[in-house]
Picture 1 (tube, each protein chain N blue to C red):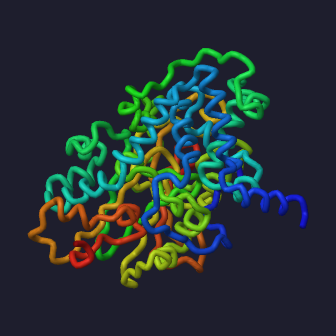
Picture 2 (cartoon, each protein chain N blue to C red):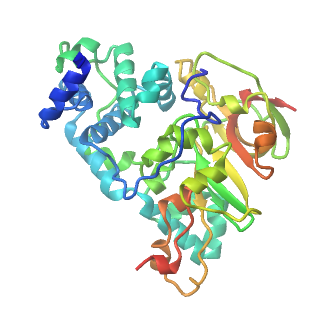
Length: 218
Length: 211
């Protein structure tokens, strides 16, 4: 979706402000939010692109005004309500009003060391890769109202395939419950001027990780 | 004074009052616990792991090893997941880590314009600036001025390459080894490797900058 989350190239957000000796979490609720997300992911209630899509659908003013973990928390509330796993009424009451539903599994403290890595997103290929390194490709001019990982700034542009990264879960379908539909993933490199015109520094290069359905031969 | 302001005023005078987010997250955790979905002890363990065990010190060891051992460096640039796993600094690595090398002619920078994708396993959780609108918006079209926000100035003839992490591949920058470090131990070298140098918004420290 063409939301405010798709920030590449936008103007007006100001300077980057690094914080010296930044703590991992700035408040206890941030840490609990992060851990709740991990525990519910482990329980199998959502996959990463579903969680991303939930955050992308927050109202634009809420998205922009919320801190990072607040977006996570609001995204979780939305998903839990939609999945009928925890109602808005229960969150408002601060206690369960109905029994829980059976989930795939439950994260225990003992299992935590084994989940400190991301799951695998690589899947067996359904068909041969359409492109190879060195191929010139054109990114499609698509504007789906649902989740996609092709950023706006890199649509309808010509780039070069730099690397083939294997066949991966396709975010655009998995985010909306239409299955993993594995697709070939490529690193596609663009000249800065192809993306930004004459204002770009001449030597700038930018790459995206592009799924095959985003691309056509140039 | 309108009602909203008055409320804030009230809030300020009761420092122990819980914030909106503390209340929301507490309610969420209670509900999910009561429904049997989560075990709060597991949450404690997740938080402890990310606060104490997983962080940029892991990436720093990988970089120091690459600086010291040319065959490891080749393996890292060839297939980072496998190389990092073989190093034994962590017992598992997500299956798609990619290491990119900075040189005098090319400076790599990592961003995620769409959310906040970051190589957790080797750098821990991302800093706030990495997830912020200024970085996500400007890294792809104005990286040299972004570097200036970090106090970093590159030679004009060093080209910049930005990697937008739009999929589940993750990137770590292999920064340039500081001059005059030929005789240094891996441990000493690791102390020169900053988190930002592995994102590409900083350079490794010089010997004189560390104790």
